[in-house]
Image 1 (cartoon, rainbow over the protein chains, first blue to last red):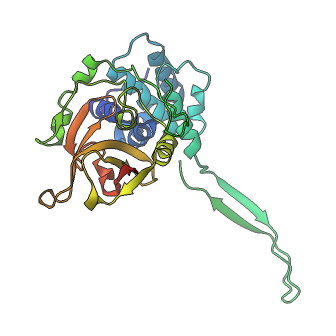
Image 2 (image 1 turned 30 degrees about the horizontal axis):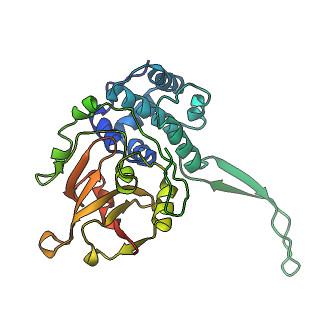
Image 3 (image 1 turned 45 degrees about the horizontal axis):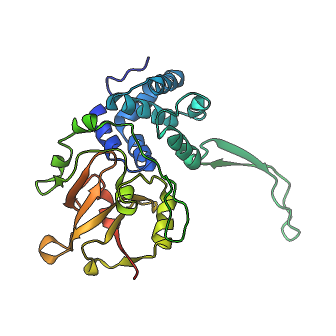
Length: 142
Length: 153
């Protein structure tokens, strides 16, 4: 059970209503502070379960639908592969759920630190002792 | 439903039924938040979105951004400078990534006395059709990069 008490439901419902495309909804929800808090205050399992539970209902109020989309977007704010928990679940009843996951997959970039070990080039003109250097490549993003 | 450009390319589309008119009406004050000159001209319906109103005669919704570029190209829309905009022209709002976030139809030309801002009729997502100043709507942050289009005769 996730805690929805701090969710800015009224504002999110307005955004949901006026969203013309899944991309608009996705970008607006990701920048909403209450959705970001949802991501930090709940486990991935609980968020995924909430999405599936709301999607499984025969009827949904706007507020319930918005809470499901908020939970889905919150999953995309958690470290990878949290959002993958939704793969294979019955969420298609939420009309934009798969669009949002596709947007997540299309825009996701790595944020791990990769350490590369590289030997320096040997130059005949300026011979130097062979050595090994470490370089770090940091890919920023979510 | 089958929706095609004038060159016969299929345009993906669907009708949303996720929100009832009753529920959308619970947000009946939505347009009122955008100034006294903003007025709703029809009951809320989720069946079509702004792109469906502008390009599909209110029959369905278009939610695929690349499809909009296909429509503009294959239906022979050309960009119109703001000074030449006429009622009936299409306004497209673009975000900073070049995605079209909103479209509508111009109902009054930009004039000096209103700071060259046109009045627009557009559909706000699953909500209703609204007549509003082009810079006074939920997509106003993208008004600065809006462009205008007209079908080439």
